[in-house]
Length: 268
Image (cartoon, rainbow, N blue to C red; front, side, top):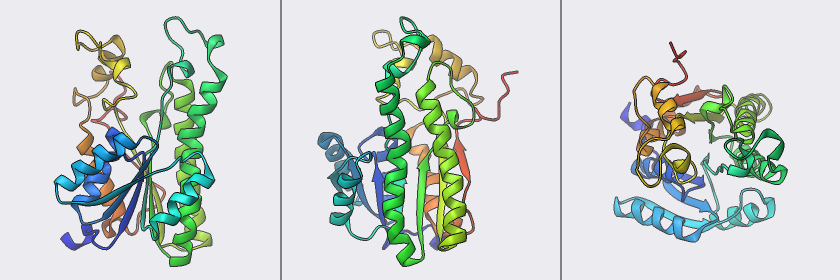
């Protein structure tokens, strides 16, 4: 059974590969033998993530690209070559697309809301459709999308992010069925739904920058997470490797919460 989790000979493309969660998922794939390509907009983040993976003996390289721009992504894909595993980890949260102190519902930035939808929704659709052309020609491949707790229920204040992640989960299920029925049952599409992890895009919402204490929002999250803590990025690795590997060869169209029990907890 151990051989089921061996990804040697596979190339994994991880979008958002310079981010906290994307790089952790990439690390897990590299630890299990995959050649990992990190794709993102920011060179410095990509370089740091690649160096960490290489320091642990992993095979990796990085390439700059924009998941919201089909031509940019197509050019990046041409330089990468064959891809066997696609992890769509690119995502964003923008304060201007959230309600909260000093910003009512009627003061939301429509431009920011469009950008969140573009990155989180179309930034998954575009890579999926372009890489899937390879999968169809080969008769197999794996897509792993990064959903969210807000894919199931909207998170207060975060209207654009919640809507984008709900759309992403629906797309995961739709594409899984479509690929299996119309192209090949060897093309699998699944998702991982992280609970609450501290990342560069949400830290200021959950932790006071000066004191390091939890904000009221951070306290509410911990109170509704039965394990009583935020997730550690590397804790996404097990689900990532599982879905990418032959251990999940009869699994498609599902979402795995990695959330410390948050989704199961009713609050009482």
